[in-house]
Structure formats: structure tokens, C-alpha cells
Image (cartoon, rainbow, N blue to C red; front, top):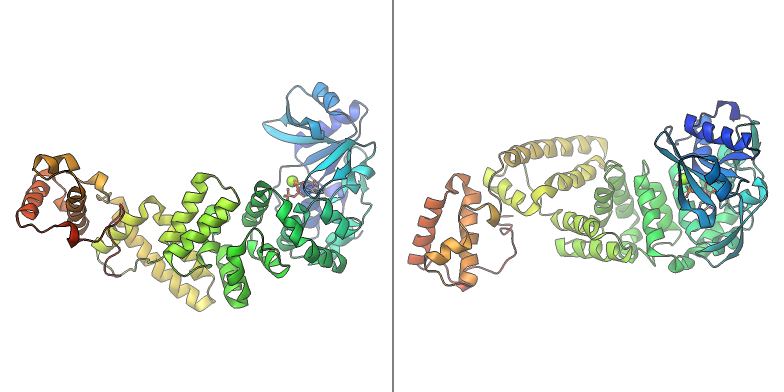
Length: 455
Ligand code: ATP
Ligand code: MG
């Protein structure tokens, strides 16, 4: 193979130490999996993460033998043959050669195998079925994965239809790898992918979610996500996205905006995808809620993304008054920076000239809003210098009127934070009560934040 040189592979020192120890004890130690694949991808200039540390090992040593050989191990999946070995604070996965004896589309029953070739035979794609033995420099590549890396082709190991039916997660993994590296999907594999998408329904929500998060963590999630759409894989887990994906231009614009969100903030990337799928704050919040519940995201993540989706619009402008900015901050709270991130991503996804203009506009707005935020003005009822009890002691009877009065006082304080002192607020409350300014009918019912007035 032309561009590849196993002599230039540079796994971390910890990985080498573990491999040497296994070999000295009379075992085989092979590098396998994503880090080896990515290192080869890198050798020919492909876009793989150059700093991957998670090099996995495959060995003929049994889990108990591995645990005996190393002082610090973690039984990460001993029943599947995987022992975690700690070296220098890094956990390396050492897995005994395995082969599948029974599969049902989502789990496999595995038994230990005797050779690396058998072990490679159960792997999903040719590019993932390569092994390298540092002790001897040998490379095992029984399915020509290196040739596929060189040509940029994603191809299933063996009969693609059969491989997807064994484990439908491979369908989603395939989208991720092809998307991440910009590879073409081999024709037979592609046909089998399209046929297998109905099987995605049997997967657990957790595995589908983890796959989505891996795609969202890629430098540019758009390519992988577009394969979900073009191969018909949205229907079961992502039905809220079908409408958007049916409008090709809108879908590609939405994906471009997802790419433009920094990769470290997966929730913001997910929110960015969601906001393109509906037109109203409630619609967008509904999409977020449905999607994240279905995928069993944690309550914290679900609330965060739903909140961002709801807050997306109405947004603020740079020319508004300080009071308007405070009103917006009162509803956004500490999520305000994430909401800006959503809008910045949308701007960056525009054509160059408009992008620059839109970003300048946003910069100016964010600067003003940031200044306002750093002043730490009172923004919620909790920040008010008077409480419900103070109003009761003025003779207001317990009930909705208390809340109406507090809301009105907060409104005044958002307009002018200088008014937030107990004396003047109590005076103002007295005045409002005296003139009968507030009756229950005078203000619409509302939630905790002030109303999005004047926009
Ligand atoms: P990445 O780490 O970039 O997500 P990876 O290829 O390392 O990709 P892992 O899930 O870490 O993916 O799995 C390591 C290896 O185990 C894969 O390269 C592949 O050989 C094998 N593998 C993982 N999941 C499957 C699966 N569902 N079916 C078959 N082989 C799999
Ligand atoms: Mg991996």
C-alpha cells in the first residue's frame, strides 16, 4: 500500500508499555479500532483527529490473565472480554479476541476466539477491521481496509445486509464514519443501508443518543447528519426533522449553522438543529422536548436545549434601550450567551459578505448585553428589594394581587434598576394600591419573567 507506513504509527507510551508487557508474558497484543484507523487516515492527509489517545488493544490473553498481569485494572466489561488497564492516569481497553455466535439486531452473544483474524471478522467496516502488532510491525488487513481508506470508501465487512441485520447501530455508525471523513459509501453497502433503516427501531434510545452525540462532536456534523436524511433514517428517531429535511435548501442551511457552533458545546449544536425545525417559540420548544425525551437525554440536557429553543426568538437588537436589554436578559437568564451562540452560528453559515455584516451586528449587540449583564441588575422577583410578605403587611390580601403588584414593581425596576430599594418600592406599592391601579383583570396572566413587550 503506497501512502501507509506502520513504522510511523505513534501510539501513546502507555499503550506501548501495555503491549510490551502482554507480549513478554507470551501473548499477542494488537492495536485495533478507531485510533488505528484514524492514524492511517492521517498518514494520507485525511481529516482525522491527530491527538487521539484512546488506542484499544486486542489480545489472546483472557480477562483474568490481563488482570493478573497489570497492577491497576478496571473491569469495564469483563463479561464481553474487556479489561481497562490504567497507565499514567489513562485507561486503555484490552479486549480478548472475540467472535459473535448469535445476534438479534442489537445485542450479540460473543465467545472468545483464538486469532486476531476471527476478531477482525466481527467488526463492522473494512476500515475498522485493521490490526497492527507493535512487537513485530505486522499489519493484518484481511478486508483491504487500507485500500478503502486510500480510496475514501466506506464498505461493510462481508455481506452488508447481513452485517446491518446483526446490529442496526452499524447503520448509524456508517453515516458517522462516511460523514466524518467525507467518504463515498460503496454501492452494495449503500443499498443495504437504505434497506436497513427500518431496523433502527429496535435499537435502544441510549445507543442512538450516544451515536448522535458522536456525530455532533465531529468537526462538521453536517455530512453525517445529511446521510441520516438522504438514506431515510430520520423517520423513527427524528420524525420532527422530516419536514425540515424535505426542503433541501432549508435543511442544508440548518446543517451549515450546526457546523458553525463550536464543537465543544453539543447542547448548543443540538439546539441549533432544533430551532430550524419549527417557526414559533412553543413549536421549537416542543420539538426539543419530544426529541430529547425520546432519546432519553438527562433532565438537565433536555431542559437546557428546550430552553434555548424557546428563547431563540424574539431576540434583541443593538439599538434597543438598556431597559429592553435587561428585559431580554430577564427572560434568558444565564442562558443568554448560548442564545447568542445560536445566532452567531446562523450568521456564520451565511455567504461571506452577509456573514461578516451579520456578525458585526451581533458583536455590537452582545457587547451591549454583556455590559448590562455584568452590572448584575435586578432581573427577577427574587432580586426585588421587596417580597410578597412586605405587601401583605401593607394590607394586601394574599392571592393573585400580590403577584400582580410584584410584577409591576419588577417592571419598573427593569426600566430603572435605581428604583430597587425597599423604601421607594413600598411607597410605590402603596400608591398603586391606593389608586386601585391593579386589578386582576388589568394584566394578562404570565409566567415568572416579564412579558416580551414592544417586540
Ligand atoms: P470512534 O472511537 O471514532 O467512535 P471506533 O471505530 O473506535 O470509532 P468504537 O465504538 O470505539 O468505534 O469501537 C472500536 C472498534 O470496535 C471499531 O473500530 C470496530 O472495529 C469495533 N466495533 C465497535 N462497534 C461495533 C459494532 N456495533 N459492530 C461491529 N464492530 C464494532
Ligand atoms: Mg473508539
